[in-house]
Length: 88
Image (cartoon, rainbow, N blue to C red; front, side, top):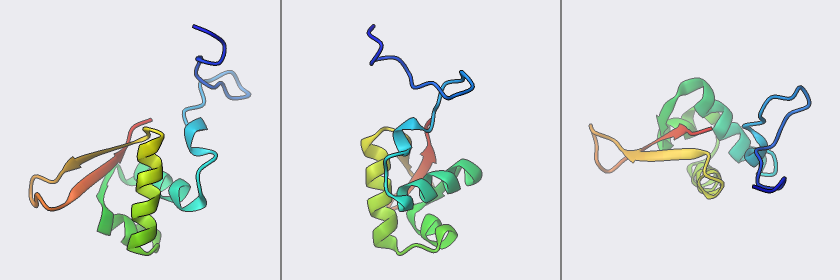
């Protein structure tokens, strides 16, 4: 394992779990932060909580999925919806 493969470390020596999110757009950071507080939400619930347009929430979720910090699954109550949660 090389030094570049190691997990990023914060200034206090702890592992920096938010490192993959740092270079993402502000909308993705906001969605990630809301998911941190609310645990699991649908796309429409995220749009409501963040006050962002649905299209922006979709883009933010796709960027978060690219860096593997968001987990999605189908809703048991409505299979047409996906539920998103933070996976840091």
